[in-house]
Length: 258
Image (cartoon, rainbow, N blue to C red):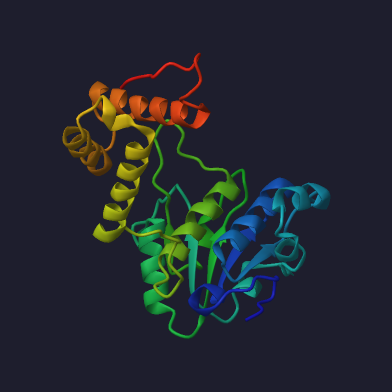
């Protein structure tokens, strides 16, 4: 489904808008557009942006120019969030105890659990001071990103990415990350048999007891190389195979032994 702003997504994510209020720098706006497209969020919206460099914004958008150039611009937050069922703001300075404060992960659960079939918006304030108290009062809750006390303030685009990532992780019907899965016992046994056959052909067992080597090799396959003895065995195996490949009949190619 094609959403305004050029982002092709499906389901709940497509109905969430990232709203940048009074952003000042093209780089942040472009990087925010890229985060929106990376995480499949519905669209980017701008509210009263300052005169920013579009060339710089395009450079930071890097592959998300469609989101950047398709972002609608409004004069007020009220216009930008009109029709939204849930509006959440972002801030690291929370002075009121009357508003619900959530981490990005908690916010994703709250948003998707309550938005129903409606739309939602997440507001981000300008780089210097963030959202005002009056703007936060327009929100149903506030997202605060946990950060170290030594450097608690995040860059605007970084904050957008953190929140957008948690939104994506909060959607249950997304395709899973590619996984190769665990090897079956049959696959491991076949690998072991092939390794044994190669060692047999290379002549490795001429000077090394076959049963003991294969027992140790299976332990290495199961647990990895964890001891110096493991490393010596693996190195010996490859020395023997290299010797066999290079031509064991050559006078100047001595049998490497183990």
